[in-house]
Length: 303
Image (cartoon, rainbow, N blue to C red; front, side, top):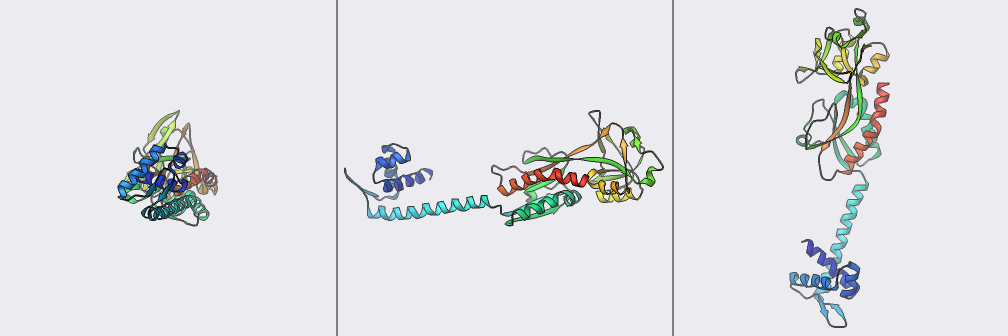
């Protein structure tokens, strides 16, 4: 089929040029190759396309009819290519995006709204979920997640930024204890713990370039970060919260930050999407805007 298409190109060029030699020169092939292409085409169609003699090359009646059809077909192909190019130039269609609930509302949604405003033909279908969705199974084009990306050959990950974690508690809780701790002392504090899939999430810290895990002594636990913060504000114990979530309560004094000596915690924020040979332009545009805007949005939220 590929040779057939190429032979049609030769046929149209020969008609336009008026002879094999000039057509071959325009196509950067030999005169013999051009003649063989016409012979193959005539054999396939089982008609003679040209009347040939030593001085002229003229279309037969069948050749003239076929030439008109070829021109229309080539025009249709050109129009189709132009339509595809136009589609590439204009960001359009549906883009399904999965984002975490709280982080999505505070940090990602403002950027997606900006993306939608920039591209009126783009339909953003945004799913809020704290679970790690199966992008292929759930038909998701793009997922924004906190933490290290999964090790999967089916997915591509791009780091968009990072956020810190803070230990904090209500003033009335900290008045009964100190606000400065070493890591070992954290295990003895009453904690409001975050759970995932029914399991308490450890506090993962970096101390002197070593990674350590502290199992919180949960006085209360929940699978909702907002619930963790609400309980901490009520004085139920120490919470380990993303800085983008805790900032407002820290600023107004509802929470105080605990200083952990020599310990820190920073987590990456990644864009994940299914691996494909050709990335849709709408997907690349969304990822590029998130990579550009998310660090600044985090800076606003984190203060």
